[in-house]
Image (cartoon, rainbow, N blue to C red; front, top):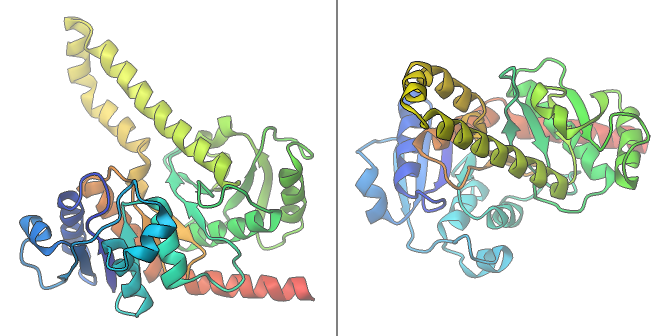
Length: 334
């Protein structure tokens, strides 16, 4: 199995990206890596390893670049070349911690969509209090969505939860302003009706954002605008909460002593609420696994993104989604 990595994307590239790749090949004996980027910079952090190769380029896409224009004009950018390795069959998946819009564009232009999927969805796995987590689709790939798009998200999220996360019968929830049927805008109402009519998925109805971290569903679907708000709110709340706790624990000698005793417990809670521990955000709906790692990924977070991509390839995520979508299309025609 071979994975192409944009070594120049993200806040801590290429050092942390390279270190994460090294961790992955040390952990998984069946894994090979193609690091795409400035060879001289990559070599600083890369020890000799016959399962890690370098595809040199001195061009990259930055966070300030306009996604579509950058992908079309910077044909030798590290992110674009990583996606092209998948297109040409030299890699099974690709990963980047860089510009999200550019990665989506690279995926669409070079890898392409699964037949029957109208729009790919950006889908992270977010933490829950029980430690199981849930998949949220979409978190910003498509700001406007139609009911049929959300049904496709539900199908892809269900397959991912079964095949990669090991959930036997994933519970599908529709993000809404209330749990009762009939709530929400026209998109929510139409999607509710369509999901209720599905027989292959375990639809549990509307779910409210306040219940997400309690594990109310294994897969939650929504439009990209709402999903991005949920994602950033959870991330911001966790950061603010830990900052407040740290401030209080450092406020006196007594609290500092207590903090020293409780440090392992706080560390475990922090890891449990860190969604980078689950990997990156998968771009579901493309013809090969594409993972968007968090922009601030350190080596451990990037390792988790690599592990996620490996599992998606190993468990044949794309072929299974393709088959499920094809079957659903036939049922709708009949």
